[in-house]
Length: 70
Length: 302
Image (cartoon, rainbow over all chains, first blue to last red):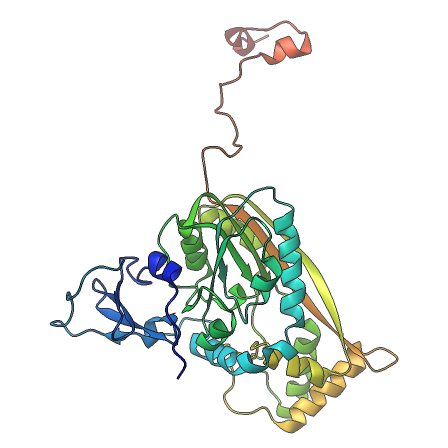
């Protein structure tokens, strides 16, 4: 699999499509996490997949960890 | 997400686009043609739009055309189909027009070429577009309108009635230009302008048209469409009906694509607007060189 880095410009502007709230970037899991919505949006091959039906539901205890994006 | 009241099955829209992504460059004629016309319109606007969004970018056709035009420095590209987005090039992501992942007052310009006709909640999408624009930001879009592929619609309907004794939705319902002006206004846009043109494409035969539609990822995604394959006999009958009704002497057939263009601005105090009633500084009587009659005298019976 070719490694493509997420575009820094996108990291700067993207928000949660559901709540329009902030996202935090989990570089290890390659996910953009919306704590408000309890959803994790995958980044595949550097491309953020901001689709609700592709997002992973966060369980209550893993939410709220980590710092904000940028 | 329930899709019962929805006209389009968005999963199917995405699937069709995902499938079409790899071979799109053989079928992108219409995207390139309409993209060029949108880029021309952008050239006519003497403004710079440093941060722009292409909503429903397909394989990045519009990005290649608007590169270096309209003062665009960064063009974010998104498509419902991750595979399309991947082909689009830089600053790309997968996003749903009905759930935009962008904050308020973010972009100077939002472009959209031949994508919004697959949206179920068009008023909602327009409202989100308007919110993501900076004040005085521009929305410039082209979408397919009601007369699109009318020839194919007629031929398929006639064939299906003749062969199967019934009719099912084969082509999408499309927006009407008249309604779009009202929708733009309702979404809070200022100075909306809607116009349309018909692009006629000549095809060697109806099969080529159907292959092109599929190749563009534009196959039927109406939620109430009939499941399963269309009978071969019905398709054959549709093709011959198409030739009979619309074909020319050489056997070529036309296909009409009705393209509706929308231009609208996010409101800003600097934009022209009507003056408040009563704010005039010169009287009409003065301008006409007539004597001013005080209002109380006008109300007196003669």
